Image 1 (cartoon, protein in one colour):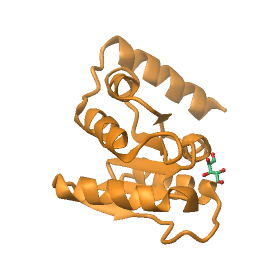
Image 2: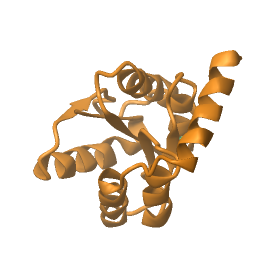
Image 3: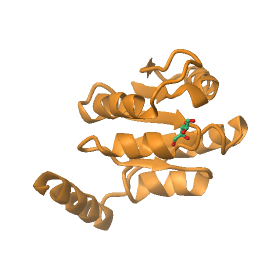
Image 4: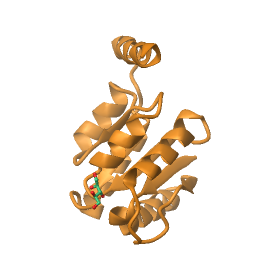
Length: 146
Ligand code: RB5
């Protein structure tokens, strides 16, 4: 199950990404927002972050105007490693090296077709483990100690 969420600035963009994921056979749980009425991106970053960190969803995709605010918010949830990407290379490497569990996209930054390529790379790439796991564990140790 893939969690998805956005603020008002990215509502239509989020709907398009959701439809794309469903068409590619993924199950998607939509955590809102549900329209273009002004909302706070942080509420949706937290909701998607909690769904992923709690195990209800295996990964999440969050969208706001830039992808910045909602990625910062998701990253405040313990266990979340969210990356904001505007090109596929970082999206792929963020899975392989950093085991990111949330992808953030900026609806005012990337066009929808580029966003779909980023999603494809991010969804299909696998965490490589090994030396990268030691670093992920170091981050988790820091997070748990503070
Ligand atoms: C909303 O206007 C905008 O600030 C928000 O979508 C996002 O870009 C914040 O990081």
